[in-house]
Amino acid sequence: MKVGSLFTGYGGLDLAVGGDLAWYAETDPAACRVLKAHYPGVPNLGDVRTVDWAAVEPVDVITGGYPCQPFSTAGQRKGADDDRHLWPHLRDAISAIRPRHAVLENVRGHLTLGFTDVLRDLADLGWSAEWGVVRASDAGAPHHRSRLFVLAHPDGAGSETRQHPGRDRAGVRLEPMGPAAPTTDPGCERYGRGEGPGRVAGMGVESEGRGRPGSAPRQEPGTGSAEVWGGYAPAIHRWERITGRTAPTPTIAPNGRDRLNPEFVEWMMGLPAGWVTGHDLTNSQALRMLGNGVVPQQAELALAMLTGSDP
Image (cartoon, rainbow, N blue to C red; front, side, top):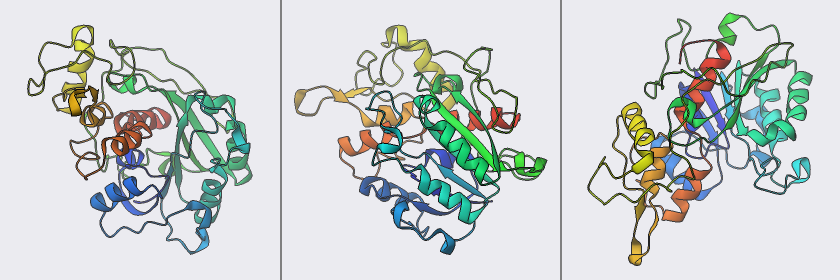
């Protein structure tokens, strides 16, 4: 299965989908450095606004976590009037390449601004879509981070096309990121299908910890999973079990002042150690990239729910 990735960042959505990355499109210098290290020899198409999609290698799946700033409640919500509204270029890529799937991701606020335009554009291309909001905590992460996930495909697609894009024809996951958390909560948002009646539920375990990443009590360096997490301990230890990694200290103290530790945020985002932090980036570069990224386990759970398969 060949995958083409737009707005790739550190590649969290692609880690969830699996397959072989044929090309990606990224302009951020720090992200480009990380991607070049993980995917040597894979071409970077650069700025999506200048790509001739008719000349791009065909792929089976297109992924895209297109910029959220036009839709985020944390911003001015200018929608299509925002210079960072780049969905039309992703739409053009889908139109020209005609993959078997498109896997999309954005903030929850997109549902109330701009998402009907996305569904309309897909329908104009002869495509249908399933969508739903899944939290990182639904996959066991110690933070909520609600995100909208969309699985789109050509109308009238058979079961092979509608299967989890990260699984081969026998239904075997190609590149697993690790076990998902038990799904015991029947709740979460329910949305639907662009082709008619239907709904998708996000199910999962609520995080016991609350607050922004890094707001847990400071852990002394070198103590690993010491019992100093207070009320955050159950959520922290659950994610340690799921990821198979001990939580790094949440803060570091360069120049004697506490700062959020990028290695801790990398762990919170469900990434292997050093996936982002092992590439000589500044702390600000790493934190910015991680803050814009996708939790792979969360995306994989979303795809499993959207296709009705096991996570």
